[in-house]
Amino acid sequence: MSKCPHCKKEINYLKFERDVKQWGNINVDEDGNLEYLTDQPYDEITNYFCPSCDTAIECDPEEFLKRKIITSHDFKYPETLRLDFDVPIGISSYGFEKEEALKQFNTEYPGANANVYYSFETLLKCNKLGKKINNILIKSLRKYRITKEVMILDWRDELELEIHNIDQDKFEDSVIQEINFKLKELLGE
Image (tube, rainbow, N blue to C red; front, side, top):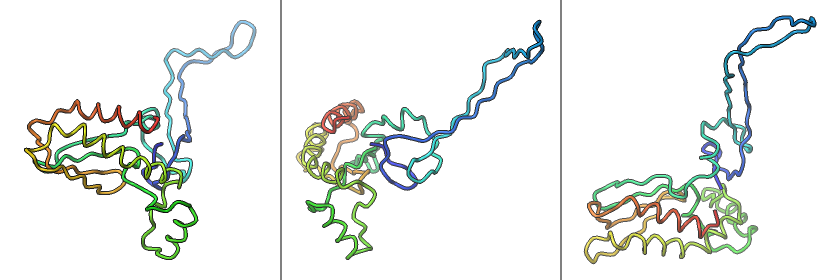
């Protein structure tokens, strides 16, 4: 599911507004009726909006709604691979089994605001899949590990992960496609 870049809520559709401009000529035909003759294709301007906060989102709607799990990757430092995700993989329900318990926690500790932007169903799903997701990442990246050092998975937030002790010189971009495929399969996307 996609996430609004403004209000951060999960959305599975976009609102749109379309303006159409068309050029041509108008004249009276043989029967005395108006006849519209277009000699150029029309221009279409479409704006997309978040259905939750109504803020404009500049995007290609297909890419936005059918995003890859890993949207970008780079080496932040020579031995630190940074991955940006399009779905909230680095989140959990913090061990809460019921939504009411998480809401009570957020009420008692308002500064925490523990994952308030995601549905509780998504939090539980990510919580249950967390170990499988980490295993996919570790198995796929194991061959790029530096010597015998341990890889360290450092979740910066729900959408960003830094993986330490990766050999940048041996790293191949094709592994990102492999991980994307495995994660999409696991997440049912």
